[in-house]
Image 1 (cartoon, one colour):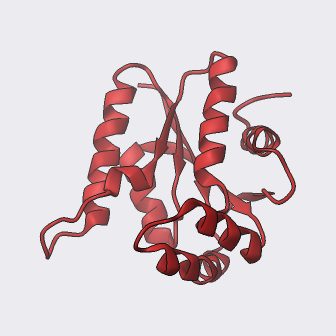
Image 2 (cartoon, rainbow, N blue to C red):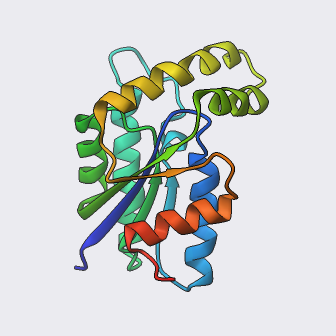
Length: 173
């Protein structure tokens, strides 16, 4: 069995995790590299019975999805998620069964992230999501889980994804 590699894209809401995930996916596909790109939040969109953590279900879903991809020979897993602490990082690592894990933190100003969230969110939780940007950014600052950071302010999504994949060693120039 080949060793699995995990590249986690993390930061607060509005930093560009999902956009960079999609663009990195396109770059890897154009280079004919085998990988799976997973927006982890999408695997946890549920309201489950009380006493059951939606995060627990989300990580179980991630384990199942990665197992399915691995059965096809996929060894690289690109995951987008605001990873707030070492325990969450370890849950990701275990779910993927990754032998090698790299964490990339996307960075943008809090103002930029708030503007992006305001533009993106139009539903009932919009105000809460905008307020969470700053709080989550502080949590991630304190956690310091990233191996490297890539700024998203004033850069194209292609440039950001390319820089991230280069720094992670997933592609060469």
